[in-house]
Amino acid sequence: MDSSVNCPFCHLTLPSSQLQSRHANSHFDEDDGLAEKDEQLARDLELAQQLSIQPPSSTFTLQENNTMDEKISCLIALQYRSSFYHVKSPGGLISLLSNCFELDADTNTTVLLSGYVDHFQSLASEDAGWGCGWRNIQMLSSHLLSHRHDASELLFGGSGFVPDIPFLQRWLEIAWEKGFDALGSHHFNNSVYGSKHWIGTTECAAIFRSFGLRARIVDFGPKELQSFFLSVPGTSLTPPVVTANASDKRKAFQVYGPMDRYLVGRNSDVSQLDSIVNDQSQSSTNYVAGGSDHSMANRFPRKKEGHQVLLDWVWNYFSEESLTTSVQNRHVVITNRVPLYFQHDGHSRTIVGIQLRRQQNGVPQYNLLILDPAHRTVALERSLRENAGWKKLIKRGAHTLKKPQYQLCYIDPGIAIGEEMEQLKKIDSVFIEF
Image 1: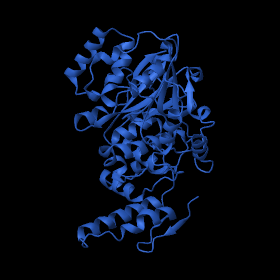
Image 2: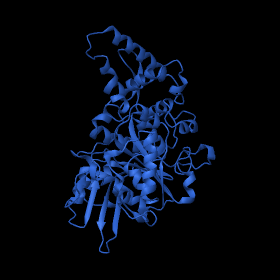
Image 3: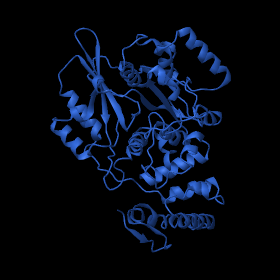
Image 4: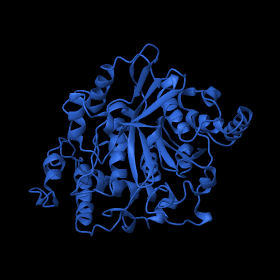
């Protein structure tokens, strides 16, 4: 537990790690002593002091006298970097994982990986049993900060680091107050700070969308459960399971980009898909990642058995031609794709890639490559360095997909502005039937 100390300059009570890493240095910023900056700093310190003496259950939304800009400015000043075990390798765990696959001489195998990502493990003293969703958001954030300059300038106020869970909870409340995911905000009574609430893909999408990132959600499950997908948090995929009224359901069918068009194409004719896209193009300015056309919808046969459709989708995501280098004659490929937030009832993990093995009968065999917040980072690093035991920690084949329903959250390239930002405030998804 981080001890609290008083700042010797402004006497604000702060966690010691925050004082050492960020706050104290702010008093030495070179700015020619402008009165305007001094006045702003005084306002920020006053707001920070207000937050520091409030109970953990309080939220920004209860501070009606503060403007949104003031709340964000205060949060940026207060937040500090989340601690995690830093893998001592230039490319982190992904580089080690790539090396292990390169040592495998199987020419019938192709591996697609995301780029650099830090592993954030749940800690017994902090978030064990409830924090997996926040840890996956941290993993996706670490990738975005490392690979996308446009995202790093916006995420968490341009801080350049991944905040600790309490500050991510504050950022989610800020997103709600801005109007993102109104149903989710209502479910949590507009407050998650200091709580141990389970979160899921909707909360992940709300946070990233509030910074202008194009976070999308895909639902997988049996048709008879379609009406339960993307209901208020706490239903279906976000434990504990509760019953939601029909009026609480979010719209479960929306086409955003090529990944969604692929999903729609699996359960409808291309002519129907064209009609949907044309109708939406006349009424909105939905973004199409990479300028892809409808050919994405026909990459795989229409009918697949069971959970194979989820594996097909993940392969399609990481192998999209406009966003990755050619996979021909390459055993391991580092793509430009952001890792996937992978949710099912009871737990969530981060998909960092996929392995394809071409079997003699011509049927592709897939393995998801997953980083689990429940695993110890040290154990992951050791198993990869020794090339022993890592497969049981990271590889997940079709036989392991035993849940009746799953959700994925992925992030398209680019930054939303204007009317598109308003459209992103409503969290909806594409549904595909198992």
